Length: 318
Ligand SMILES: Cc1ncc(C[n+]2csc(CCOP(=O)(O)OP(=O)(O)O)c2C)c(N)n1
Image (cartoon, rainbow, N blue to C red; front, side, top):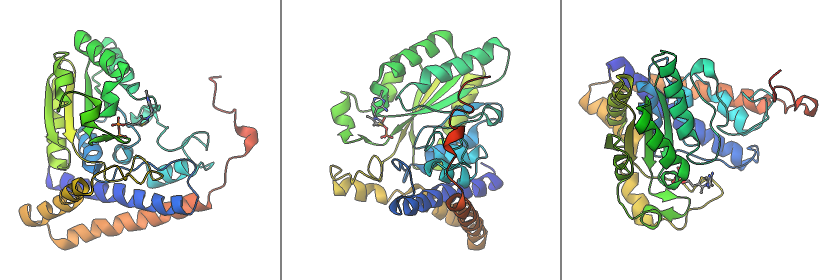
C-alpha cells in the first residue's frame, strides 16, 4: 500500500466500525428491522480485500462485509436506510441489511443461502472471460459456509474451468454457536480448496496489510488465466451471530485473547510507530468519519418508510 492507501484503509476501517456502532444504537432504539449482523474484529478482511480490487472487478459482499460496500463507494446512509427499511434505501425498503447491489459499481447483491454466491461469482468470472472482458469475481464465505454443497460444487467448477474467481474464507471460529472443531475434521479451511487443486493461502485476517497483499496476489493469479484462488483469513467473531445472540457459548478467554489482536488498534499503532504518520493525520480521518456518520444517521432517521402502494415496483423486469 502507498502512504495514501494506508490512510484510506485507516479511514475505511474506522468508518466500518463507527457505522456498525451507530447501527447498534438504532437497533437498541428498535429502529432496525430484523437482525443486526456485525463485523466487529473482522473489518480488516473486507477493507483489505476490497481495496485490492480493480475498478472493473465485481464483488459479492456477504452480511459481514459492510466494509466492501463502503470501499466500492456506498455511503453509510445506504447501510443505515437498508437496515431501517426506509424508502430512501438502495432497495427502497423492499429488502433489508446487505441484500443490495449495483452492477454499475461492480457489486453483486448477495442472498442469504450460504455458499450460493460462489457459483454465481464463478459465473461472473467465466462469463467475463467468454466476453473477453478482464474481470475477476470475488466473494466471501464463513467457516460454516464451507460445509455447504454450493461451496464444493462452486470450487470444483471454478477449478475445472479455470474461472477467474477469488474466494475469501473468513475463519472466525464459530458458525452461529458451532465451533469449527465440531463442524469439520480439519483445522485449516485451505485444505478444502487444495482438494480441488486450487492454490490457497492462510492469511492473518486481522492484518489489513496482509489481507490487501494476499488479495492482490490472488487477483493477479486469477486475472492471468491461471484459475481461482482461495484465501483463508483467520480471525474471530467478536460479537454473537447477530445482536440478538449474546454468544454465551464462546469461552471468555478466547475473546480476551483476540481482543488483543484488534485489527484497527493494531493498524493504528503500525501507522504511528512503524510508518511515521502524525497523530493529527489520523485524527483528521476520525473527524471525517464522525461528520459523515452523523450526517448519514440523521438522513436515515428522518427518512420516511416506503409507501405500500409502490411495493411491486421494480420487482419484475418490464
Ligand atoms: C444454506 C444455509 N444454511 C443455513 C443458513 C442459516 N445461517 C445463516 S448464517 C449461519 C451461520 C454461518 O456461519 P459461518 O458460515 O461460519 O459465517 P459467520 O456467521 O461466522 O460469519 C447459518 C447457519 C443459511 N443462511 N444458509
